[in-house]
Amino acid sequence: MTESDEPILVTRPLMPKLENYNRYLEDIWVSKWLSNGGAKHRELEARLKEYIDAPNISLFNNGTTALMTAVQSLRLQGEVITTPFTFPATTHVLAWNNITPVFCDIDPIRLTIDPEKIERLITAKTTAILGVHVYGVPCHVDEIQDIADRHGLRVIYDGAHSFTTVHNGRPIADYGDITMFSFHPTKLFHTGEGGALVFNDSNLKQRIEYLKNFGIKNEEEVLLPGINGKMGELQAAMGLSVLPLVKEEQGLRSEIRKIYTDALGEVKGITIIKVPENTTSSEQYFCICIDEVEFGESRDDIYDRLKASNIMARKYFSPLVSEYPCYSSLASASRKYLPQANRITKNVLCLPFYGGLSQYDINRVINLVLLRK
Ligand code: T4K
Image 1: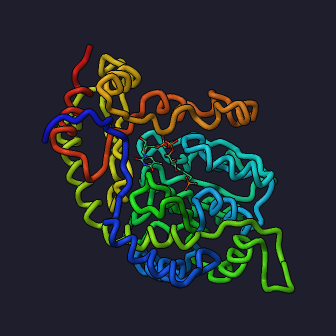
Image 2: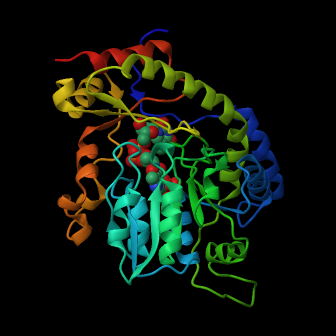
């Protein structure tokens, strides 16, 4: 437990033992099969299906392509109601599908789309609701499904952060029509780059498989304007090597969550983004919200102090997507309609959070957060 000169980052990828990864690589070398639904891809798909109890799963080369394909697979068009408090990919996927994003404000506790504000945004052009399980915290899935059922809308979840989240006894991907997971290195479980779609309707499987492989049915027939969304064998091998490490990593992260919570939970002006009741967290991020008046300092003051000590906390998600120049002229992007999102985005801070973080470094983070000017 000594101080190191290395920066402390918001997250670090789970790295399998090199010899374990190499074992998979040796098979791949012998087979000379590197992509297009190879043996490692098939094995990972089967293992993940079991691991998260998924009725149907399709692997992808990243979460963004997976989400683009989800939108295509449901033939969405017109307008989709979504959250501005997210990573750019969520909204860009709609734009790439020629769909107008309609921004809805967020619940200030969960930081996910506020179901009470969705219905007023529905028009004749609305085809779906796209929610984000922010930091792995589930959206208000039952309320959202009720709204969707009443108005004949589809529900897609960007579950980039929520691999393994369980809510009310059900795996998170059981909710909605399709859920996307990201397997980027910054995610709890990763494949180097990668992602997946999980869905209940098995009729979607064939269409999704065509869409992610250029629409090719066979050598003679191309059925759909598909894309290249395939996960390669090297990525799948990484996933097979990382998956056995996930449980232990989650355990370590929940211990760190507890240490942070004990130290910061009662501090005036700091609100911890909590895992809701009846939910098992993916343990993707640990985030706090700073009330500048009550705490006596802003989020940016804390961020800067940590940075000056080589500790790289991150402002996920700031700025809001609705503030990007490509979306800010939309009527729904107006700040007057998104008061909670515009407040939260200025206050939120994700602290370093990964199993390899030492007690010494955790204490440094805590002390620096609390060390007011
Ligand atoms: N939807 C949501 C809600 C998302 O959060 C994301 C991705 C997506 C969709 C899209 O899924 P993918 O298409 O990416 O599968 C990072 C990730 O690149 C991004 O995947 C992730 N969300 C986002 C929340 O975080 P940046 O711009 O913050 O990345 P970067 O390079 O600054 O890395 C973050 C930290 O991780 C750094 O402190 C360094 C550390 N790191 C990063 C990489 C790549 C490592 O230690 N090793 C690494 O290999 O976006």
